Image (cartoon, rainbow, N blue to C red):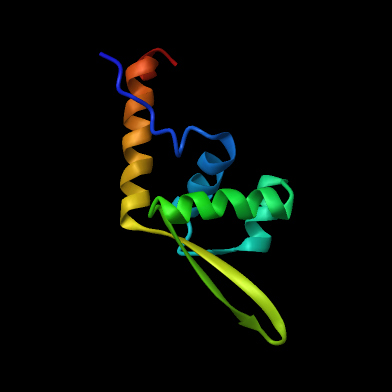
Amino acid sequence: MFKELDPILHSQLRLAIVSLLIGLEEAEFVYLKEKTNVTAGNLSLQLDKLNKAGYIILKKGFKGKYPVTTCKITPKGNKAFQDYVDSLRTYIRIDSI
């Protein structure tokens, strides 16, 4: 039986963001922008959606005189990602790849 895919993570960009954050303690906005190759506005919008869902925490601060936004995955986000991967496995046969 197929499991429903999480609509928050089913977005290509949001999935990319969470995938990057899974392996990192935290990441700055600029790093995520460079890795995902999207506009600052689009990244900001998707980070806000992930934050509102409780999947990430956004911390705003300064590095010298410059504002810095840092993103960190939450336990809820980590579980959502693992559940998403498990759901994908119901759609594809991993052992045949």
